[in-house]
Length: 330
Image (cartoon, rainbow, N blue to C red; front, side, top):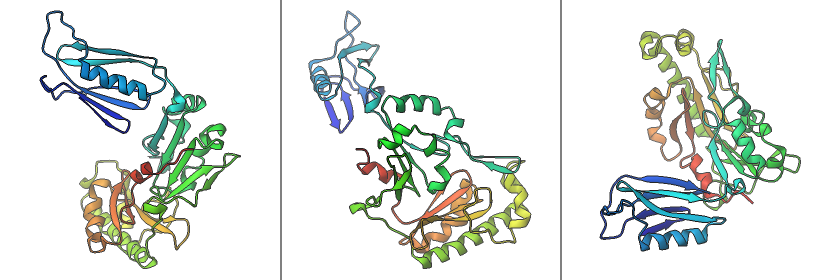
């Protein structure tokens, strides 16, 4: 039997064959194939795929271009092993990725300064450039504003990828989409919105003011507890050194990535705020100090830990996953 779910194909054995929980996975073009089939042992020690599986394989091969040859399933032990011979076509590949800590190296502290590495500083750079040069496409998604990733990600991509529409950048947790112009410069696509009907949603000014107060109080409480019990973090953690000062002071509202702690307002203008990012509380403590204070406002804002010591407060329903539902590429 074979079930088809868009570009994912799952095979299982016939009704009269024993099904097993193990999974053999192979990938070709942009398809993932999960094989869950076994057959009774045979005297020859190797069994070709049964007719049902072969028919499903033929259907998939016919719908997948360009596949030159599909090698039939062979049994190895009790699990089918798949082998596919198909040309590698980078132009059929679209990479969708988070940026910091995924496609780009993780920001880190060095000598008291937060370092934000560029794409070219990490191991993904060289293979990504090869794929893009061969016609692949790249979609980057980040919770930050464009200014945080323009020089570190966008400007590092080939001019051809940016100018031909094969590079897209979703910022502010996927609320804003940037496409490259003919000169490769990123320009906001005003027609895009992550919610149904391409709608954009924003926090009210009143909620923004309330969240700033909540964030500052949470940071003071966290640093007060850390000052009293430094063992909440491991020896040498840079946040330990900040506790004596910031247990008493309000964290500034700023976009300066070198400032910790801070409250960062995310949005292009004061009336288009999609959320706040609170930096200075480790992920493991975010719910205790911030999330618990958001419960009364669940219909207006949702909270979620992000990064290593950050917490996002955004409009309900906003998620980086929403961009996958938008037909972004030409």
